[in-house]
Length: 147
Length: 406
Image (cartoon, rainbow over all chains, first blue to last red):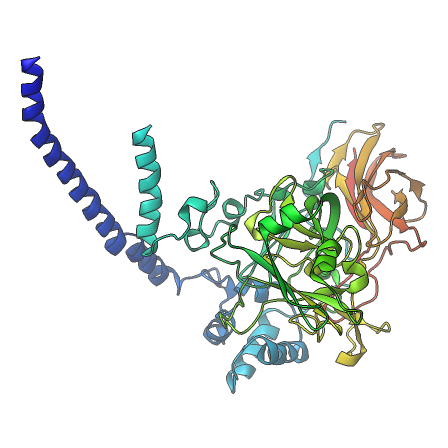
């Protein structure tokens, strides 16, 4: 019994010190993560990737590399995704009316001389495709079906 | 036990550290839910969607199914399309959530907590077909602007909630009521706090239908965040944009609602048909109400290679907005001849109906199986694209799959 109490007396201060060290470690670790962790890596990723062009495609946005790309990125991807641009194919008239609609209802600013640059980029790189009244089935992924 | 709870706490603590702010109501966050600010860019993870779902847009999030993914009788969350107009609300406190009933034709504004709705009113469960008005837009020619949905912006889940008409009756509704409008907690893409991403609604007659719900559960569980947690207006058979997510206000209007995406070309088609590509003045556009008759072959997946002499069992679903589907036919010769498939009764009004057939092929070759539904008014799905409209809504052309007999 006496021996047991003695060890407790010796152990307790050590235990406290250990806990303090652990807490200090956790706090420092959290601070390190907070200040140097994700923020830094996020910045690095954007810096490296934002300008990258691969096979004629601007990697970050998926947009075609061509005259007007930067103007499109600056004005058209602030509010919505570039995916919305890429999947739409329209003529000059329709793009202009879409821009008017965004200005009227969605908070898009006046584009000035940039409007022409943007619309030219869009009709040149994303022209309408003639689809007719019903297209043939394409990209069929054939597989063997055993019924 | 203690160590475990320390681990659990420290992981939420480190989340808070990463965010730089404390997570308010962290004890109320459902398990498995990740605060939006921490969400990574993997939408499949984020929204618990199947990897075969197709992302059309990531700001706002829009995602569709493929035909073969929709084979379940009741669409599970993982195969349910996502159509968002704005930014998903970030902080949702279910306990403090309120629904306000107001508007010119409300007797007086009245507020309900979720608990009020659940305890004061009788609960109902219905299977309800929700299809995006723009489902099939990608096929229109000249192209129509917007998300280029193919065929997968449709679902039929089981929704549980209280009837809107019961709540409206309790709140008090004036005789001059024309429309109900929803307002919700999502925010505009431009981050402009005065703008709503979308605020639509339905005429009083639709609001008063038994199946029009203020839903708090989908497929027996709380509604997934991306589909409107904790409260959603569900108006089956109408463009899914009338089923407002993250619902916090119903306004009883004495006129047709004039909220965001009610006017202009949004969810409207020319009142009288126009030639493809024609410019249509705004005043000649009419609001879409019931969705048209349509069907999908959900089994087999398109592209099946089959041995000669084998027959093929096909199945799928058909729906017809406010109406019922009375007949489902299929053709393997591009519409030269049609055969009837077996079609089931709907589980309830506005639920999609299941069909099946056994198809046999006369000889080797490339085939397409086309499905064509007919509604109770005799309207059939067209084989080619229906009437062109500026925004590419209501494409109910027949669905088809490719099959090769070898």
